[in-house]
Length: 258
Image (cartoon, rainbow, N blue to C red; front, side, top):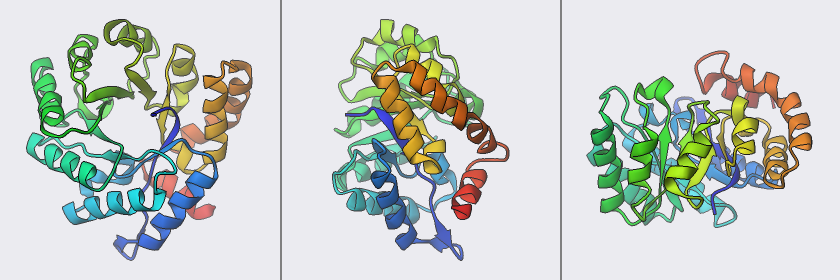
């Protein structure tokens, strides 16, 4: 179910308030361009600074507008386990297909704490969890051994891996099995990630170039890495530009130019 180009959606605002009309139009455009899934309220969607009401409203809007056309993985991460469970429960109630839950930032839990956090979410809500590992921002790196433990839980189905370490795909597959969904969280290294056996990516660049990104992952999944490499050559400058300043500022600027 979770594969290919999955857009980590930005959250449109107008005059400081959610722009609901732009959110709906953005979802329609993304799907028309061929994306394989949507992630509202991930960190690219500014989840750390959305109010609780805004967070829940955006996810509900996206699920409603997608209307089953593509899977919706709701951003449900928090460094407070209780809040992460609340967000996961809301995602289930409004019909999201999974929750994306980031490693607790700032708290800096050890591996046992990381395991306990994600296991508590998976125990509390019967909805698939994709674990988001991004040590560059959360300061903690979920080890392969911890993933092996987490993968035994029926509700923990995959990882968004933003480590940039493409060899991790092989190590996680060996530890967790081939059914564990591995998605890249780093656009620039996604070609290597896919060559090692990844299933797709939760992509920032797909906000701006959804059609090209979708084609890139279609080619990778078909084993056409020569064709995929040609598209990567067209996208690499955009990948770099979208992180030239704190995200999602550059992505929102690029979208404003479109």
